[in-house]
Amino acid sequence: MNKVALALGCLALAFTSVPAPAGIINAIVWDFNPSGLNKAVKTPIVTPSGKTKYVKTNTLTTHGSATGLNPLDATTPLVTVSGFNANTTAHTLFQKKMGKSERGLGLTGTKNSELTLTKKGTLIANYLLVDMTAPLALKWEDLVVSIKMDSVGANSKTDQEKFDVWGSDSPSSFGTKLISASATNGSFVTIPMDGDHYNKYYFVTTAAQGKGHSSDNVLLQAVKIEGTNPVPEPVTMGVLALGAPLALRRKRR
Image (cartoon, rainbow, N blue to C red):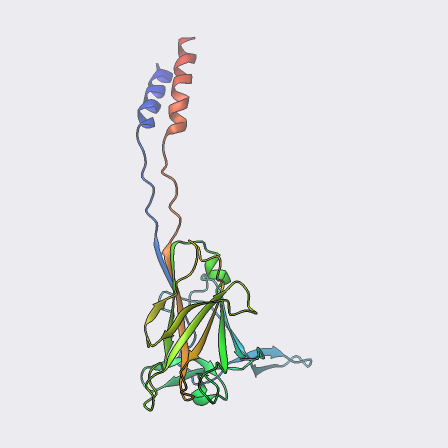
């Protein structure tokens, strides 16, 4: 009788589905000047004598957080930003903070330490490359990637500062232009990428954009990803449903 009761109980459970937890909404922000510094980016190196010294660098690697600000979450993927001149030579990064609101990542030795254009204001003089390989490897569903630029439209003489964003699967190519001449300042702008997991554009390039205004310059402040964890399949008692008739047959025998 115990076996029969168990089999019947299993059969009843077979028609009961345990709902799977809904996908958890996630958001991670990588801010590239969370402490509001105003100096060139430096990295530690150990000299042959064993001493540690800090040297200027064209790369910045950082974890993110829910807001992008400190304290950073060490469990989040790392994002690396690299600075370059238009001829692809390395350019030292500069974390800039000016006034109450202007904050972000630019370059040393440029106008206002920001991303700039050539003297005629029609060509890119330098750019920043953001390696998003690790965040995109999370394979979140319904993924949205966005970018925040700062110091846009702040030029009192022209008030026409804008920025462009490209996406590529290679660090050596700008790839496809995804955002053209955006004038959005201090707010996230969605990057229209290809595919559910944006697997075509792991590298994002940002640069100033202008139409003859050589004084236009902008900063990169942050990037963000939003999405949901894959939802586990509903937990059903299908296995028990198959096992119940077998238990009944054995009881009859």
